[in-house]
Length: 551
Image (cartoon, rainbow, N blue to C red):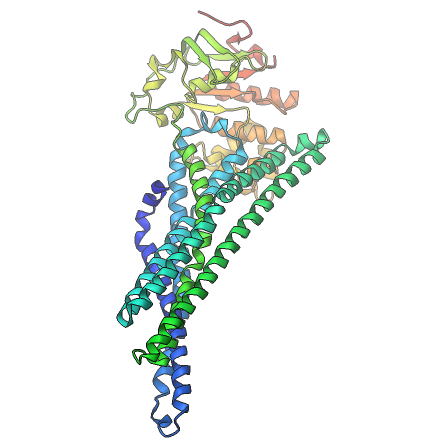
């Protein structure tokens, strides 16, 4: 938790403004109640003696009441603005920090996490950390400042009044923290329950087609309902702890008021304190307990905040699967590919994927890599892209080990179509320009023609500016696949890698697209990964991984 408190330092000024305004609002509210009590008591006492009643100044106290009332409203409004401004700034910086920490983890480390779990850490867990300031730090500081200020002011009147008030404040704070401690574990469990629920929902939505095909809807809904009940029950238990904390604070507030009245009555009897002053002191002490009511929620929020922070740090603190040099080797003039004595096995995997694998692809060659699912076709490409590093051997481009390249240089050398080529929730134009931001409309039209999508795009009312939705959900499977392929071809990288490019395409369309790909890649190295036998006659070499190559 101290780590995240250090991350709040850049926002210390905004936080101080919000906390200061919160203290001013509390002070104005306490002063308003105390002055009103004094005013009413003094006016009543003045009325007992008609001869001197006209000497009592009603105007100044009434003005003070109005000023404090307006001041409290203004300070509370300013506090809300300042605290929310600080909170949003904190969340923005936390998300930026978190993204910078996890971006190097893709895809080697992030691939181990389920998408719903990642979504929860990026969204709900980061959101939970806003409690650290607005529900923990700020209320705690205000409560301590309020108790200290009240103690000093009462000490000017009588030390017994100061000790009584401070003692009850301390007991109220301890009671709130104790009740919050009871909800600490519930808060942690609530974060975990929310993570399980989000993961289940996202997994179900992503696999909804399979759920419906295999009649898994009742099982899915029952699981979601069970996880939802767990979360609701956790929230209910947490609110019970909060209610217990509020009750303890109210109890000690009553004790504090009673004790101050008892001590003050003796002072009034000794003529050491006026009756109206006693009303002022008693109501001021009572109103001061307002600062302690948020402490019960703060103590409970600390549990959920700590659990959310732990989940974030567990991911952000994970070392990346590979580390790229800051200053990489120069880009080679040739782009021959070499896999030399490759040995690789996935962590926790069932066995070795490659053992002494060797392969050389000359610049400009067209090579197909075939084999059954699970034989390592995609792994071979992932190692070339340095999503992971082999445990033995090395991979070279133009004679230079890929470990020596900076990440940006290595990525620029390759245009890759993966099995799950992602399309973003944006327009067709935006998705294509990711590969080549400076491309003109003519370039886009040319590449769309190559993958047989130009006629479709031209028929759309908004053409290239048509919104395709997350993952290209407004397109068919084949259309989305060809759009992803068009983006790869537009990049003009010297090495083109296509992993199952003809999935979801009929034979005629696949043949036309294959011809266009060969034409656009005639001066480039092309690696085609497939488990089908389609289009292999156009390749210079066909590598069957079902029969491992060792030389």
